[in-house]
Image 1 (cartoon, rainbow, N blue to C red):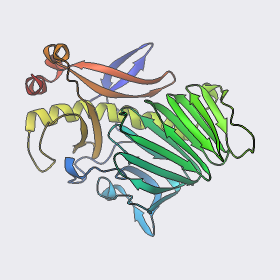
Image 2: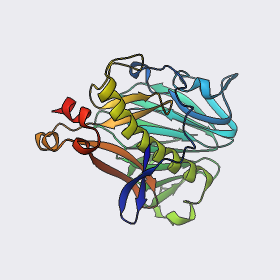
Image 3: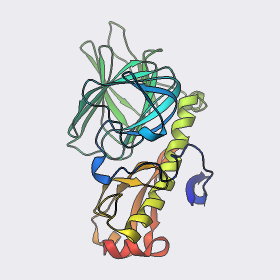
Image 4: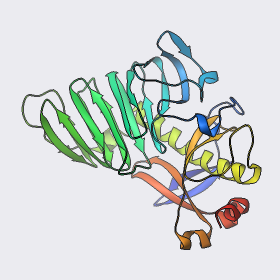
Length: 294
């Protein structure tokens, strides 16, 4: 097994390190069961309502409309739309407001959360609310929501923030402070001050292991086809990786030139320089999948 690690300005594949992954062959979730609100990873003390969550909940527990997930000394990763991951930090709470694919909204009631957006379409409306403030995510990127500091930070990407009737467009490297009665102002922030934070580092590791799961799952589905894990390779979307016991998201390509080159785009993790995407030449790495795409 390999994972994508940034070396200088490039991404390279290295043997996987084996932490922050799900338990091997942990659950029997299928590709059809991934919906907005699905639990994709959990560690430590996490609950949904009065129900404690553990590794057996991965892939089956779902935040439905009105449901709340709370952490104590623990963290959780929740799927939103394909390619969008909500990561909840310690001593935090989130509520599912709308689990629709076209209109996805989650409320941060307490603490700290981050959202990694690796794929988004014009039809997607993805919003995070904090008290009276609402943030709509507009582009791929990495977004940070800190209710304790009343701040929204955009490491990479673009967001529209509305708070008490005031609006601001926030681009990468900028943040806004919420809760004031005046106009919202997007200001620059020093990314390096936050990249050593606990939730940022945890999110980066989760993202790197999902990149590894992409490579593993692509070969698995191409080689095995239909099975208890789902219907095999069918196109871009969520796929269950039984080895990592987690869903991963594939970004397919429709271009004939990409098809002829045997290229599949895999999601790669967050680093100090933001989100990366790496093209894997499947003809060399995963011949069965290349034949499926041709």
